[in-house]
Amino acid sequence: MEVIKIKGTDDTPTIILDKDSGIFEISGRSLPEDVSTFYEPILNWLDDYQEEANDQTVFSFKLVYFNTASSKLILDILMKLEEMHENGKNVLIKWYFPEDDEDMEEAGEEYADIVDVPFEQVSYTL
Amino acid sequence: MDKSNVKGFLEFVYDFYRSMKAHEITLVYEGEITHQITKAFTSLTESNMAKESEANSVQKKVFHVMVECLQNISKHADSFGSDDFLFAGRGIFMVSKGKNDYHVTTGNVIENDKIEELTEMLNHINSLDKDGLKQLYKNQMKEGRLSEKGGAGLGFIDIARKTGNKLEFHFLPIDEGSSFFLLTSSVSRNA
Image (cartoon, rainbow over all chains, first blue to last red; front, side, top):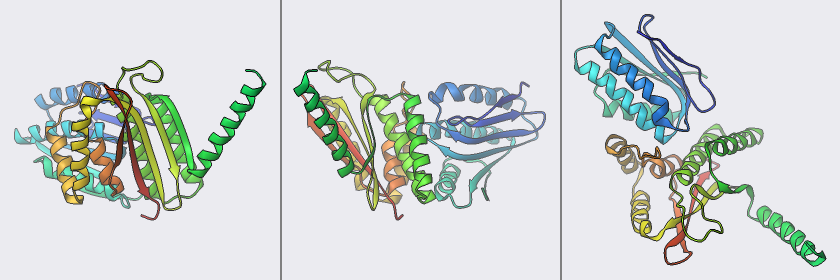
């Protein structure tokens, strides 16, 4: 499968989706000018990946900031992963948050409530 | 400009300056709000706050509120009415810093027939406590769809949640069809 590697900027996150190396990660800041266009290739990639998913998929979110428009698209990604989980695939979400960032921690808790998929919260020091 | 006009103009500039100082306004802008403008204003304010050693949590909150307010204008400001100052995606944007709070104020023209819905939504948000807002945000994220312009209907809820303060809003009538919508969000500096 094609590897997606997007280098982050001030307003867009770094994204790596690499089936062969088993790396699935979104990190940094997300407030793209056009959220739908930015995240469309990611969602499409996940649709294809779903057909031939690895035995285990650990998907990491390590965001420091996202705007409300992005929060909707993050949920769309999580729902794709939930679908994979429902189809019997082994999926784990790792939600990283800076240890002093309660808002980011809470955002993780909220997503964990909404989607039915194994979800792990991991705090880290900046 | 003839001499008396020049004098009038200079006085206006000085009054404007003094008035900004009196209201502790650190940033004011009128015009089209684009993504570039949003990026420039947020990074300018971020670096100012960092220089003034504002608490990290306050910096983050102000940043959040600014982004959502600016995006509201760029997505929702209406384009109609008299040609003087009304264009789509335009508005006034102000940040002021008081002793206890930061205030982020936006003003833009909206059609009168949107006032009722907007008032209802803002009153509803203001009536909710922390848990109520959380629930509303979750529901809206699950059920709401992205609008054509990329709005998720989450901005106001997010501002209320992040600041922990009520949203202050007013509508000033312009003519039969339109009004000026003013919204002020406050971030406490000693949070």
